[in-house]
Image 1: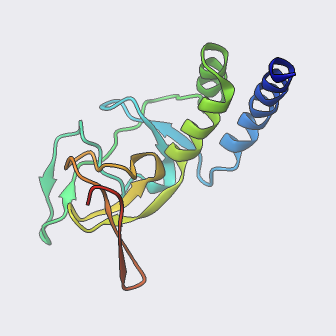
Image 2 (image 1 turned 120 degrees about the horizontal axis):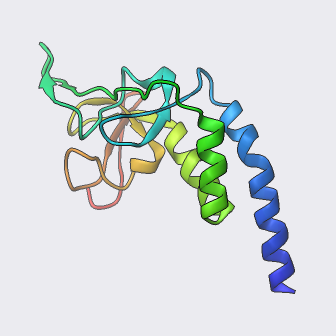
Length: 140
């Protein structure tokens, strides 16, 4: 039945969540400014919409995530999975921990997969530049 299938699927996603968090190279951090999670190793390439922004010498937006001290990513994800559908939590964590090439519009050097539909610095879609080709997401 559909109910037993949904329960089995939820258990599978809940079981895979710890492995997903462990698989993120460099770990997972949470920002004090925006409260979002992000891959720690990508901090210097991502833009935080709530952090104080400035422009670099080259005109790039500089607004870094500020990591929470003593953030336990496993505990955070476990609490999310207890309060929400584990399938939704899995894909939220996946999108928040996978980075894509930067946005050509705002010149951010990295974009989280979860922010693909719209950059946090402009309301339209992200314009990804990759290996010399430009790919435009919907609403670009």
